[in-house]
Length: 486
Image (cartoon, rainbow, N blue to C red):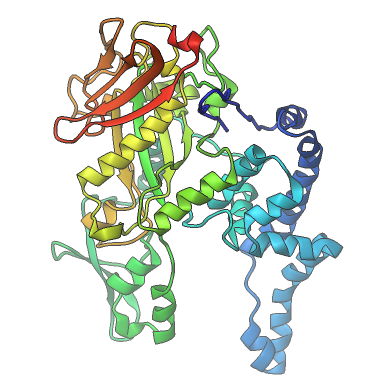
């Protein structure tokens, strides 16, 4: 968690990792009581994970057979109770407390354990990330459990980066498939799943009319697209169709990818003199997550049909671990931001104007959290301004291909590896006079010019401005300390 610092308040940071002792030292800066409680909290969650995780791969209890089946059916269905009984034995007498994690708001759960807002808000982000809910929403506790339940190479709750970017994962899957005899066709839109007169799948029909015969059809489209748009409805039970149509898949997320010409130096955690990535550069970085009320207000904005005025941002810098993703000295930043409602208030549409306005807002939060406004260089902002930014959200891909679906976002390649952006190099330095630093380098559809300048020679207030050729200028200011102003 990184703070941008407001007014005269010194920005703070909270770094949590796999070192239990160091975690306690970090938390103790905010609360000694919380530092002592944190190991017990993690042990509490670990026990719950031990009980719940096996249930995800177990067959659900067959209630119909237990209640109405014949004697033999009832006896067979008793076996489905075993995983539940095992989970109950693990949780023991604390079962009521564990049950609360699954059904209660995460804010209530965390209030039971901790007192410091920065720690509670940092943990609460895992309860709302990717979900259209507030920390005060009942059931948000399970979302947190879902995120800490996974494991990577034996480390519980760990995440990892794919070397070479996410596209490398797709390439690996494709390579393995073709090695086993699969044929891969791209740009081939499926419009219908074929079902024969006996109700059995027999293939798919493509948009160009071509038919592909198969006894099995696997779909990685959403359940709504697969069963409500591609599959003939007459072969599906009415109750099943109703349940699928009632699934809530809306997402609050808009993804923003940014290319920068150097490693960000955050006000709350400045860079090392060497410029090499520090531990916090190599993990999830949370902005606008200082306290739970900030998260809740961002959610409330979306519920009113407005993009969050101060969006929750979880960003990562994959190039800090994988230098192949960017030119030497440069980096790519992925911003996972929320909340953006699928339907805007007052009949507005997610057109380019709205998307760019939201992207500007998120990037401003990133800029205000870095040292671009306090560095001593004559062109501090130009040296740290985003050189390219691209926004993709839940409002694009499905509308273009398979119709409108809430809850989808996509990504696009960085222009460093894109033939569609010739001559774009984020390492090109910008030049400006000492009194005004600016860059008007190629910055895609998001930023056309970023500048900072004194508003008044006698007042230590500077203005950070986003300028466009086709829109009114947006201004965001903050006061600097006397040392910064000098």
